Each structure stands twice: as C-alpha cells, then as structure tokens.
Amino acid sequence: MPPASTGRRRRADAERSIARIVSAARACLSRDPNASIDDIAKAAGVGRMTLYGHFRNRKELVEAALADALRAGEEVLSDVDLDGPAQDVLARLLESSWSIVAESTALLAAAQGVLPVARIREMHAGSAQRVEDLIRRGQDEGAFRTDMPIAWLVNVVQYVLHGAAEENRAGRLKPEETGRIVIVTLQSILAA
Amino acid sequence: MPPASTGRRRRADAERSIARIVSAARACLSRDPNASIDDIAKAAGVGRMTLYGHFRNRKELVEAALADALRAGEEVLSDVDLDGPAQDVLARLLESSWSIVAESTALLAAAQGVLPVARIREMHAGSAQRVEDLIRRGQDEGAFRTDMPIAWLVNVVQYVLHGAAEENRAGRLKPEETGRIVIVTLQSILAA
DNA sequence: CTTAACTCGTACAGCACTGTACGAATTATT
DNA sequence: AATAATTCGTACAGTGCTGTACGAGTTAAG
Image (cartoon, rainbow over all chains, first blue to last red; front, top):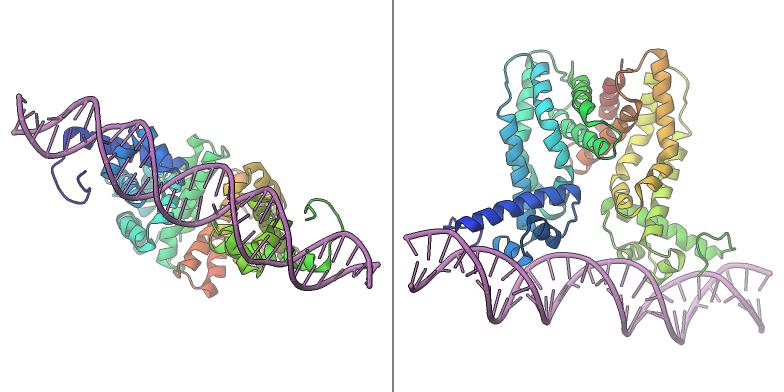
C-alpha cells in the first residue's frame, strides 16, 4: 500500500483504481456531501479496502476529489478566449464553466466539513485569481464597477453560481436557460 | 411528557424550558448545523432528558428552531414601511433583515438535512411571498426587470444574503458595510 | 516465472450520536 | 397539603460510520 504522497512507482491497475475512485468520489460527494466511504467504493466498483489502500482517510479522499474537480475546471477555463471587452470575456467564461461549478457545490460543502478553510482557499487560489484579474481588467476599462470590495465581487460570482446550481437541482431553472440567467445576473452586478 | 402538538395545559416552568431550548437550538444550529442534541441541551442549561420531554426527536427540534427564526424574521419585516418606490422599499427591507437571514444560514442547512424540502418551502412561504410581491410591484412600476423568471429573482435574494453572511463570518466583510453592499448588489440585479 | 504489488472479504474496535427506560427529586398549581 | 407536572441523572440498546488487522487470492512487471 504505497502512500499517495510518495512518488513511488505504481502499477497500472492501481492507477486505474485510483482514477475510478477519485471520479466516483467526485460524483457521489457532488450528490451528497455526506456520502460514506463505502458508498464511494461501491460506486467506483471497488472494495472498501482497496480504497483504503490508496487513501489513508476520508480527508485525503475528499481533498483528491476536490482537486480533481478544480483541475477539470481549470482545464475548461484555459480554453476560453480572453480577448475583447471584459463583459464579453465574462460571458464566455461563465458560459463554459457554470455547469462544472454548479455540479461541485455539494462537493465543496463536503470539503468544508473536513478540510481547514485555509487549505480550501489555497486550492481555489487559481480560479479566484483568474476571476479577480478579469474584474480588475474590467474596472480599468471602465466597464465594471469599483464601489464594492473586489473580494466581494469575486466571491459573489461563486454565490450566484451555487444558487443557480441549487435552482437547477430543484428543477426550478431549466438547464438550457441557466447559462443565460447566470450571465445576465452577474453582468448586472459587475457593470459600472 | 405532554406532546408538543397537543394544546394541553403546560406549567410555567415548562414554558420557560421550551423557550430556552428553542433559543439555544437556534444559536447552536446557526453556528454548527450538526450540533448534537446534547450540545443544545447544555447550551440551554437543561438536561438532555428534559429536552426529550418536549421534543420527540431531532427533527422536531430543528423544525421548532427554524420556525422561531422565521417568526423573528417576520416580526422584523412587518415593521417595515412599504410605501414609496420599490427600490427604496427593497433597501429598507434588506437593511432591517439581512443580519437575521445571515445568522440563520447554517440553521437552514441543518433543516435541509432533516426536513423534507416541501416542508421547508412551506415554512418559507410567508417571507418568499413578501419578496415576490415586492418584486412584482417593482416590475409594474417599471423599476425592476422582467427578463428573468420571477422565482429566480426571489431566490437570488436569498443566495446573495447567504453569501454576505459567509463573507461576514469569514471576516472578509465588515458588519458595518455589509448592509450597504447587500443593498447595492441586489438593486443592481433587480433594476430594469 | 518469480516477485512484489494489488485486490478485497471478513472481522473487529472505537466513536459519536440517537432515542428509550427507569426512577428519584423537585416544583408549580390548586 | 395534595397532586400532577416537570426535571434530569444514569444506564442501555441500537445505528452507522471510521479506520485497522489479518490474510488469502489475483495480477502486473521484470
């Protein structure tokens, strides 16, 4: 049982197991932040003991799942064209990322129950920075408002996205219209 | 142990105990949605058995706590002057209620873990209706936008308030400025 | 083919919590 | 003062989870 931390050589089937576990963890925790280790192992089609062979405890597993979700998010975001007016860039960023953020709401809640706040913020630093940069740029262009703390503007993006996710899950917002609504709502908040 | 549901006559000390328990439950669950029955009893300065004498189970207790928080909210809201432009009414409503909503975020989370969704929405019906009425009025006056579903507009108010609560708790938003920021943010979202 | 890595079942100890049972002491109410 | 309500400790059964221990069977890698 090689510790996940060491860079020790791993067999191919182990790699596959780990991938399936992380993926299952993401899925399960995104549905129910209190999903048990057992649930996740079953969803991964793997014995609980196999799971414990790769992740010492729940904390490590949740962290890996969150990291995976963030990685997927970064991947999507890095494909977005950043040229043009800030308003438009914002729309493009949201269009391609709202759903992944939405799916990860519950996962984030799970993480908040197990990981220290500092660790979570640290993991989010990348995406947060990306949003902050965009907002600052919009402010420089005169397109975005400057009468509220930048930290609030950055985080309110998260809150609106999570809200939209909730509406989605509850069936009060149709998936087709969610993108537009998120964009319109956030443009209204950020516009000068 | 008289069931809470029956309108049976109760002794004065029992009334007092119940009040203290409900109040403690509100406080504890608002800090930690997973607070145990024991925690709450201790906080109320009461034995766990006394608590079980008045509330059959956790579910009943959480429901009572949520009901109390909502009652307190309604009380504050019913004092607000509803005359004048919708924008101003909105500002007044938010000014006097944001903090109580903020405090109850975690309590609501606790309720969501125990009570059926339908029940929670039912309990919220009053406040939700109040917000919806205001928004419709603003729309009739031409002050509020009409290009998004009314349900989204109503709920986004909640989400922004909860977000502000979070920022507050994390110390990223000073309590003095939170009111203004919530108002400005929501006015931006709702404005036509 | 040999070895080390991996899988995974069963079993167990531990924890934290819920809700119940019993019963004795206290206290409001009349 | 009599009565019934209330308080509340202790004790217990039950549940559902976490993480560990052991060990036998399977499989990738050289």
